[in-house]
Image (cartoon, rainbow, N blue to C red):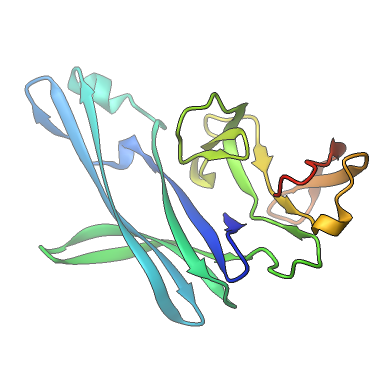
Length: 215
């Protein structure tokens, strides 16, 4: 997901979810521990411009059978970057599979081209679209998944359809101040397209403008 930061930079967030059954758990008494070792990177025009190591620890207490039954539970997280605007921006998620200390070996799990929001203040622009397992009104607590008053629980596509039967989306619309009229509504058209290109669902909604609060 990419969001406008200022006239020269944007905020890019890489949401990830790791299936617990894909992790190697180690036992110590009744406690089972697994480590997520990965990396998130951003590339522009064939060069890496930012990277962040991901080190998450997951713990469970119980029997081996209980740990084995975790199924499609996910460890969720987000890596955030502030980067300059640039053409051909790509988000990359890498999984560490070995290597010596300080020189890990990674496998590329995901490469996703990003559409950065238009930085031209004279045009309407749409921020990145995120998919989630739920979208709820934020309760004022600090969370990396909160955007403009909405708390979004990521739903990586690798598990969509396995445990989830609903698809939520969220995006930001950037409107030039001279076009903002609180008395006007914007019309949002959305559609869900399957792998063959067939439209399986579509809808139209009207939303009131947010006044001078942009996005």
